[in-house]
Length: 257
Image (spheres, rainbow, N blue to C red):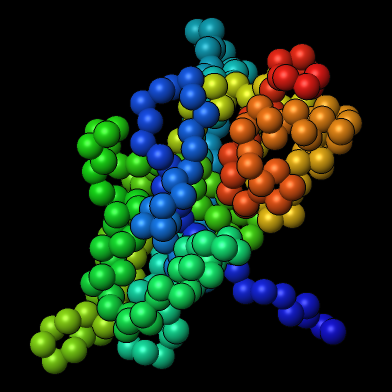
């Protein structure tokens, strides 16, 4: 076949559990209301990355060397569509990919009509609303196939396009910008990710498995039981995509990693 016909994946935005512990590896919330599945995947997105250099030149010099200073946080920009005209079907539930939870969610769904104002409120709850426990909007993770991005919303604007006779909006375009946000511990782990003598943090994708990650980090897939024990995983054979794992350095876990 010219094009492979696979399952259509919808972009999902999930909020992190509230935490103020800088040293703690943040965990994604598993509450259905803390995840939002977009109705229509973005047609495009932009990923901005910059590098800051400093330079010192002697008086009268014609040029100077660019000395690396830092790499600022990346940012990503999307435009999402909310369409309540009935032409576009509503998105699947946020728990659809989790077998038991997805089945429960499907059974409880009453298939209400897609109301743009209600969907905007749900989206705002995940990315924008102020959380009293952390005194700020929460961090989120964006998933779309192999694309993942940890960040916090920096701007959000809605452009309303179509309306019912009473002024109720039927279509809205949400232009969003997210800035990368990782803890100091996570940054150090990412910058030294090649050594088995350091702790690593990974977010599982659909194609990942514990033996595969164990082989990648430790050079031996047999350590996956110790990794599962360290992270207190119940379903260690098929952990859910989006699970944040800590893979400790050699000798730090029960069981011999």
